[in-house]
Length: 136
Image (cartoon, rainbow, N blue to C red; front, side):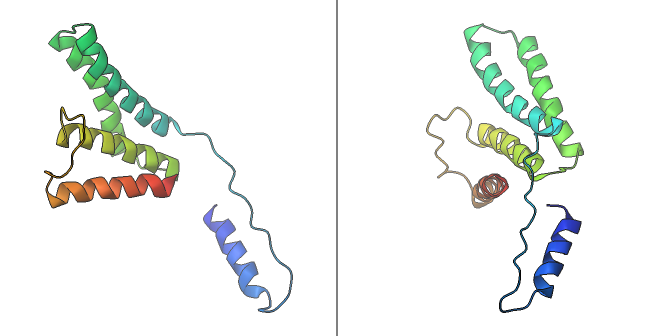
């Protein structure tokens, strides 16, 4: 909902009598397609998973791993530089950040045991997960 729409809806609510009166239907927020930034963040997450699987299965050399990693790193750089324009952008950035953080804070762990992380690392994980939930 745009700020001007929120203001007009709030104004109508405040102008209505406290008892009785007409009820104003708030305009619905139309579902919008994901932005290019959000799509890029989601692609980068899938690409990292692809790298981790294909590099082993196909016996990639270090140069191939590095080249493929550079592609997903470019999306991370873009996510840092480009401001979010929607909750969808913010959610996708948080998902990418969470994936990167988990992959580096909990490397080579299949159980993703977070008990050995320090309080700051656990806080980062908790906040990212909350942002993802709130933006859904």
